[in-house]
Image (cartoon, rainbow, N blue to C red; front, side):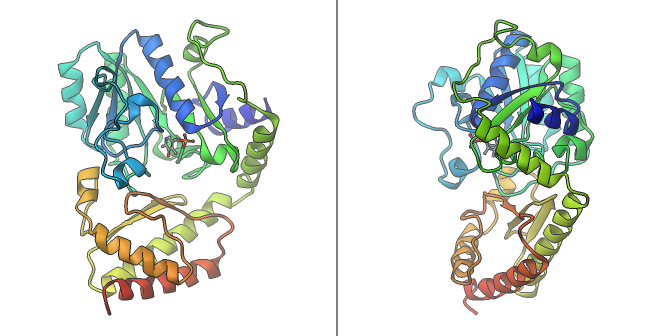
Length: 336
Ligand SMILES: *Cc1c(COP(=O)(O)O)cnc(C)c1O
């Protein structure tokens, strides 16, 4: 109840919220709700975006799926996978094509507003407003999967930063402060369709358990301190700028990006606007860099297709030390 109020205050689009136990549960429930509300079956997702391991989402997914190079997962029935249409991130024309080819069939567009499961990819300024307009015109729902970006890129998540109001939002990770929590919420007229008030079934024995709720409350409380997000963003900016400078000094093509404390680096000249461009980055160099960084006590995410996070526990000195260590690690990775 208290945590629900906090979430609602931070994210005004979330008029009602339901707690679950993971991000995967949140996205599965949100899609079931979207299908029930629209009486349509097809969902549109973006290549390289990861929405948990629900069957419908293991189609051209990011995160570990991308790292392992799995196009799709065995065990997902083809009939179900055929209801998930994928297009490149940032490609409005491709989204318009899908809506043209499958009129009245798209239940929802689900998107990581900033992609964090294919490395870090920022949206073009017009991308999310265009998705919003397309959904409004066609009756599809817009789902922001903020499991990663929620309470990380801004106090009110990516939707606050981007100024776009989704119909449904999924949350996880930060909202549980390390405990297993997920949540989904959004328009009250949609959320009222969920059982017991409505006919769309979703339940969970451990959902909303007091330990996890307390962890979430404590975490969101910490992030509510004045200047919390400003400090975090400033340190993250310094980290990615330091990595970018080091790469350029070593003559390595590089693209860095961040939003709030979410960041990523690709060894390619860029720009990186979608997963295909991310895949053109030098992943072998990234792997050697990762190993050399480990030897220096810096534990990067072990794949060019995973984003990094700066924590409020990281001090200015930690950032400076990390930049120096990553510079040396890059020299070693290049055999210098
Ligand atoms: C991690 C993640 C999920 C899945 O959450 P789990 O708690 O691991 O099930 C879903 N969507 C996004 C964007 C994620 O980053």
